[in-house]
Image 1 (spheres, one colour):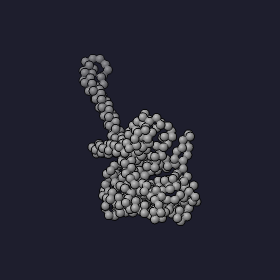
Image 2 (image 1 turned 60 degrees about the vertical axis):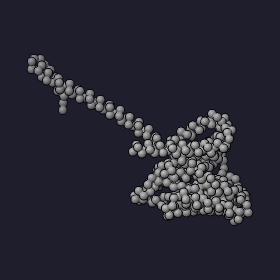
Image 3 (image 1 turned 90 degrees about the horizontal axis):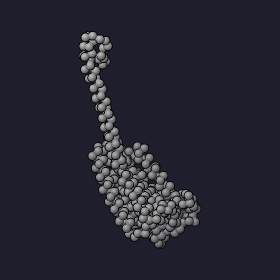
Length: 382
């Protein structure tokens, strides 16, 4: 529809027509101004909603709190502990974080799938003992013992997963039983075979040097020795992140952890997913066990007891939910880094090491409370 325009000309007729056209022209201009104002208001509202959505999206990130905590802890020890500021000290922090973080990664994936594994600490020692005793007593190539140990470790993980999914008993109880059995086996078999609680050295075995280079070597970066476990840790975190967010199996993990019955109803192989996750934990325990074996050349049969709680704590601090369905691989890495910075920072600051457990408990409590708050925010935003 075209707007009415005043007619050019003179005389009574033209004046009368112009008088009739003037109100139409004014009305059209008012409509255009109103439409423009509405468009501007809509744009402002959309921009505001976009900002609010961005803030909510940030708060929904499980690792947000742990990242803030890591920055604060780093700043704290940089100020209070001069020795913490050196490159060598940070390399030590990364090493401590990596050996914890590799297993915390597997435990975190399992927690996203709504299960726990309390046998992961002693499973590290079981893997190392199996490899070293097979090598020493059967005079095997070191790599042969490594792969036989891997089979044993994966079998333990598969047994845990099978029993949990088959019986319906909570994984806390199943893996607690496995923890006790492995602890007993570690001590009893080591004493039976070696006559003591420590294994003999295997550094003279064939393949030892290459296995040590793979699991327990170091390299220099600008004059600072960095352990190879740091590289493996970062690589595993990258692979786990890709698995979680870029593959169908990753979607299955979140689905199983969120609601196993609903996931099963839409065709997700819940049992296979959970067994695989338990085997992931077993693999990570085996890998760290191999590092311990080739780094120290001898294993104490009583090692690893209590470490399972550290892995769970690192995963929770990193944003993994205790009720499943929430968490990231990067979050577990940040949680492990917080552990490493706190553990080493207290030493560099000259504080009493007994304070470490206090800080660890405080961080766990803060992480649980914050994760619950974020879960409520996320639930209210839906």
